[in-house]
Image 1 (tube, rainbow, N blue to C red):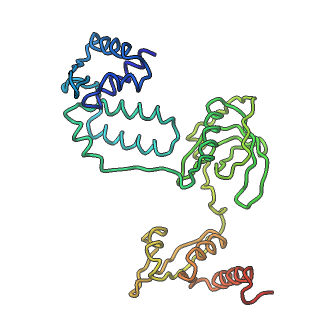
Image 2 (image 1 turned 90 degrees about the horizontal axis):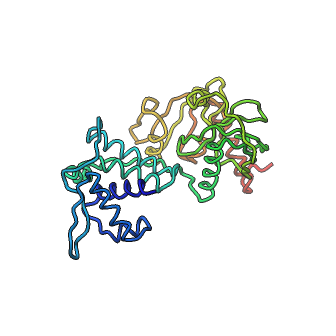
Image 3 (image 1 turned 90 degrees about the vertical axis):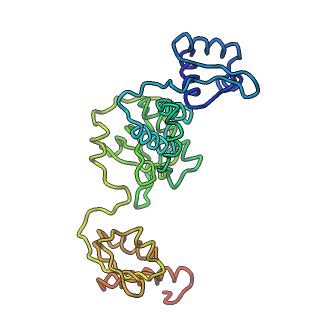
Length: 320
């Protein structure tokens, strides 16, 4: 415990110009006498700590001192810090552990470079999942613990088609992809590896029993990945869509530039292949009346029929 406390004090002093002893005592939840002994121990270990008296007094480390950053350059440390802050946004790790790790990285920057480090924060990486409720965090924490401790889990899972089944799974790894969390696991019901989207997991129950982890590595599991939600492989459908100018920005966000043709009135033509009829219909309906299927004609008819079915649900025309 003392070694961890000494490291924490060193990191705080390296990342702050000056820190008062009482602030250190409050943060580390120890007495002032303990802090004074720790500061003395650090001085005896060769860390040049200077004390100042008065209202603005406190303790600081001489500007010339820094932790050995070995082969990491200033730019590399800046990139590492940005990456860690992006990882922090996922809440995948305990906040206190991430704060300590970020502090260690910051401590590798000399006092003379601190101002440059602050002015160099030009990139922010945010991987926060779109759906990020307290219940999601609890579910994630339970699954992470089950992965670490190799605990069997049982839960109700909703498939892409809406069917529900009870699953017993050997959890292998958690993956953040497309702003959503997924679980790699060996499903005992299927007798094979499966990928489960955490938002579709209900009634999660971590069992007392453990399992022997199977040989597949995370890299091998990722090689099995088929994007959840993507339609099953089938013959692709060449499609031509027309979008009004009012939704041009959303179309540019969704489709690759190589598929887009710009029209004089600000509208857009999109030519691309869709791997299923349902995917095409769902895509078009997202844009309401701002999108039209030009080709193929039979798909335009199918979109029209779905629109009529929706209208019928609300007492619209063409009710049967």
